[in-house]
Length: 251
Image 1 (tube, rainbow, N blue to C red):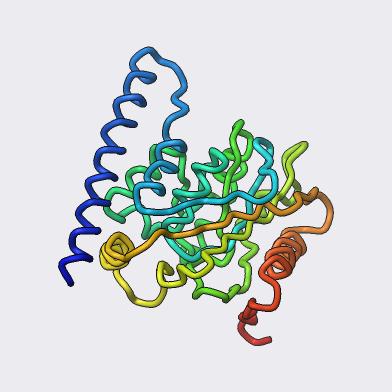
Image 2: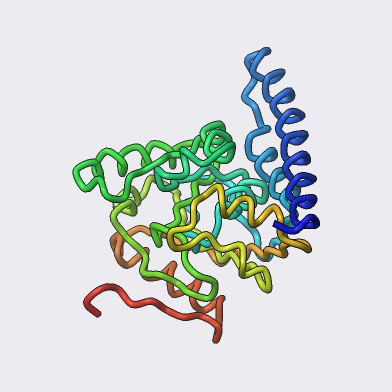
């Protein structure tokens, strides 16, 4: 790795560590006096800034009684959405073992699921349904994995059984994450999480991320597959002509 890249990696890793220590202190103080801590999502947003992300929010996030359905490209997605909205997450189980990020996500009420555990889907749906009753947003990445820049994978509807029928007053809000020219941050293929993190921290320049909170809708009635399709269509429309829709197997 060139000297400049090593220097950027070191500086950003140090900034992340300083951010971690500062917010852990604040979180610990709140917990010490038995107050509900507001710090974990703020702290994830601050980590995104330490990584070099500059987030622009377009649209208005619904702040409670809402399920966000978002496209997925990077572990940065979780940091940025949390910072912008206070959301908790449903994330793939592999993220739990990612250095630092996995542990931080546990502080932010992340529900880790094993997409291959077909026998556990009913339990996962019930856990998600309980999370939706809390007073903060919950985000699901229905592609089930990270996609290449410009691609939109099929949305998996299994977990959306949690909104079929939905809890009273719940809305679904599609969310489109656009990294613009920073397409190299995508975590796809067989790249190890540590290798991707090192590559992102070592890259030159800022990472411009625009989070589009698209119009929310009532998920009651049409069923989980229709909810998934409506959210995917909304994100595809926001992506515009640049989108490459990956068809479902067998279509």
